[in-house]
Length: 129
Image (tube, rainbow, N blue to C red):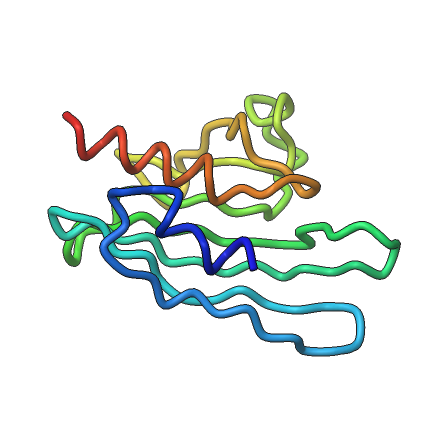
């Protein structure tokens, strides 16, 4: 239900195609896009599980675009050999100039709390500039 109420919580959201699809008895996937003004959009993939009782995000990818230009993305692929990411391991953000290889810590992301409010808030702050 949380995913479907995001447009009511964030006035910058123009539309959302996010869907929660149960893929097994104890896991589901969230996929789709959230569209914002000025051609900004957020592509979302989350794998959710509740096999230990509490709902957790097992893995994710969040890509932020403006038109056909990928601005940055977040993913949860561990990089244990990169000490610069240790403070938020495995959560990190890919940023320019070399977006594929330039990674920075991603404070505010978690496996146990919703990440979308943090990322949507970040996008909304881009729109105010």
